[in-house]
Amino acid sequence: MSEIITWSAVETVRRLKNRDVSAVEVTEAHLARLAAVNPKLNACVQDVPDAMEQASAIDETGGESLLAGAPVTTKINTDQRDLPNSNGLPGLANHIAEEDAPVVANLRQAGGVIIGRTNTPEFSLRWCTSNPLHGVSLNPWNHEHTPGGSSGAAAAAVASGIGVLAHGNDLGGSIRYPAFCCGIAGLKPSIGRIPAWNPSAPAERPPVVTLMSVQGPIARSVADVQLGLAAMRSHSPNDPNWTSAPANGRLRKEGRGRIAFVPHPFSSETHPALAQAVEDARLAAKNAGFETVMLDLPETERCANLWGRLLFTETQTMMEESIRSLGSSHLQGWIDQFTQHFEKFDLKGYMRAMSERYSLQRLWAQMFEEVDFVVMPTSLLPPFENDLDFNDPTQAKTIIEAQKPLCVVNLIGLPALALPTGLSNGLPIGVQIVGPMHDDDAVIEVGLMMEKGLGNVLDSMPAPYGLSS
Image (cartoon, rainbow, N blue to C red; front, side, top):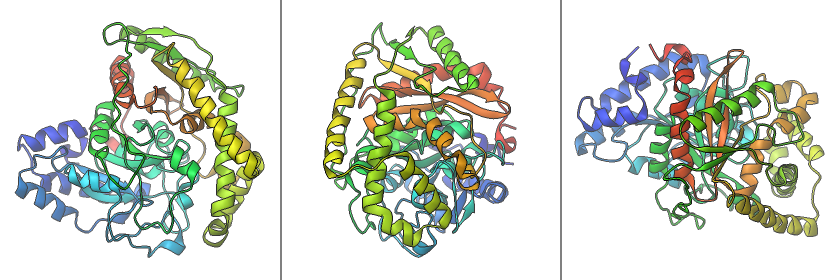
């Protein structure tokens, strides 16, 4: 195994810029890692034929860009020119994109070498990652458990040394849950921070998806996530919601803030290991000089329920025909479980619910006048068995209830960083750090300090497939 694939994204870029190594050498090492490890994972399901050409071009131009030739992966539900955007659907296997989505274009412009395309579930609507077109993607820590979804393959790939940064997207935790399951970091940015649009889409995204879905980075450390955000966030005129709004600058105590730690944010029980993860994060934050407090979060049950009712009212109204014609019977059964769990709005109810969302956003904004950040479980349960949603439909309520901490953040539109805190029964566990709207950079800075405080524990975690050797 080449030492190159053990380097972080930050170190890889440093060595590339210092000319210690060429983009071609780095790309060759990561493609070799892909060839060696991917048959065990089924994470990268589309080759990128011009990866070496991308690397050669960067070497020829000097590699002075932000990523300087660092290898990255992109997700198959996002347009990349000359390659299919199938969204995990056999019926769209030949749906070839003619141009890059803005986030892919930004990665290229930043000097990223795209070496592979990662799997997603059908329509990207599950917390597991499998589909009839490309099969099941596996968790590198334990193949019996999910790598998460819908960006589970992206997380599994980068956790295993395939690329130094992975692209994902997040509508109901699809960046943070895979990061949680695979023991790495992932950022759900504020709405509009990274431009989102698929040029090949036959129609605009519907309103709720537009307001709750984001693109974002997944990586093996918070510093790498920070670099990924910088590479992905550049302006695009194709996303009217794009923003460069700065952080609000309210951090107290000369760069240290007040953080609320909430181990039990819902009426649903938090698994003891995940409640302990919150406590471990609290101690790390306290040792880093933060003021730590306990707090009741505003209307969490109401937020989680509204997320589901809005999203699946829209899904039934706008996507049901496509799901019935393109989706597998397993997916249709899973969507049926969702629509049974979340009552559909009529038009008047939908409009009132959209207004209610603003009221809830206001409550959370007011809460952030009392504290600077919130730390709570990423999920209320450890990673599920792989494809549990398909294999045992009776577990649908358990799965949905466990993911309420993820969905609340999407409803409100806030930045949230998934941070590992260690292992429980051999599986990764962790927390999410949630900040005020547009305070993405501050959330990352807190994550850097908390990660440092957890260093002894995180450093002792064995890396999948001997990555740390």
